[in-house]
Length: 163
Image (cartoon, rainbow, N blue to C red; front, top):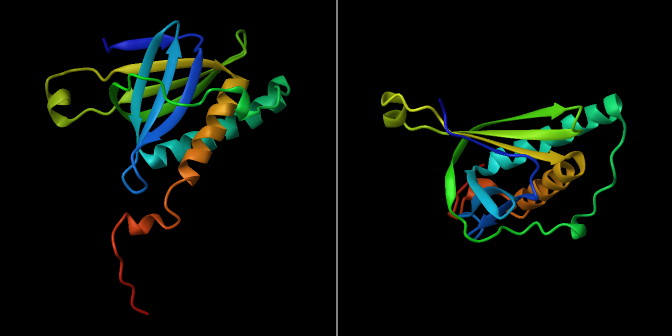
């Protein structure tokens, strides 16, 4: 049985980074009743999360109706200390519970070969939040990704191009 943590509902949910452009580490972080869970993401996972949440929320508007507008200034979207990652994310998924009118973000641990060989199940985290919280997460993830280098191909290195 895999290690599983369910935060239902989350008090906060955010994406943030630590480090200079080109060397940033991306984090997904959630908390509930003083418990903080931090996961490591790749930049492209943060981008994909933003797009997937937007897509899902647009579909939900058609199915269950609109939600409140989001103003990121209403939310404290900063990472909270201590930043002690539980694991690096391999896969993420989204779901919706109509009874709770809540969206769940499921993150599964990236396993290295030795973990798989030992028969260890990957850890799974479930973060439940309102549609409004998820919209704020999507906007935050998009903003954080956009703060990177204008040309990610540079990756902090000098590049030479011949034409």
